[in-house]
Length: 345
Image (cartoon, rainbow, N blue to C red):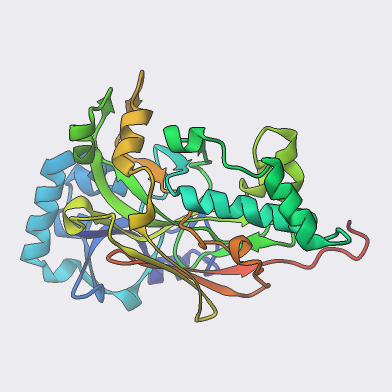
């Protein structure tokens, strides 16, 4: 099934909402996409009073029983609960994750990012090519072996989630906003000390993930040694969507094509088959000495070439960014990169 969170357009308009702004005041509903994603079944309207359909979190918490009931409702197709895509606005499918961690499951991206950082660092030298070779030979831009040995991750802000069609605005002082082409697994059941053979059973489904980054702030702040700070942590910086595809719909999540387009032009292409670690590996690692929980989101990290930074290209104010993962869908956002004051550094 393909599950969404949405608001009704008429309610959104009555509340005076401006399209494209994260954090909607209009009531949110959980639904299932039908008919090639052209129709939405409002699950709460199809099953009035059933607690599982109060939100995506309650549906995930309801476990296998909730999914079986959802499938029944999709087959019944109650006419009064059907909406067209023109009737609704999609929100992040899981607007309030229990927890959000982004992992380094694609090793090749991390290596290419380090090479690009070395290239930028050498650009001002008298002989940039020679300086680049010197920096790479120094070992300073080698990937730490720990990334290959174990699942490395950072905890992102689960309260700063945006969704499809939201406008993403660069944080104050930034002028280089960048996308990151990722996908994510949504945890569907509690597990502690999960064994490798049981890890897949803990996955509820998958969604597209854009881990937005303000590259200039990130490069300024990371040398302090405490992370990217507001280089990755700003309003709406974690975008999920357009839907959550349940685990059964993707029998092999590690054979999917991933693409990024800017203003309709393809910038990035890769595949989930390039993951060094799997989501199952991440669940095993993250459940050691503690539990993973329903509604946890685990990001894959970025596919190789999956950022403008990798390609030495930058987004401009007003650009439309589309991330697509085969079998899941297209996550579409426009960006705002306000001009800095003339006296800003």
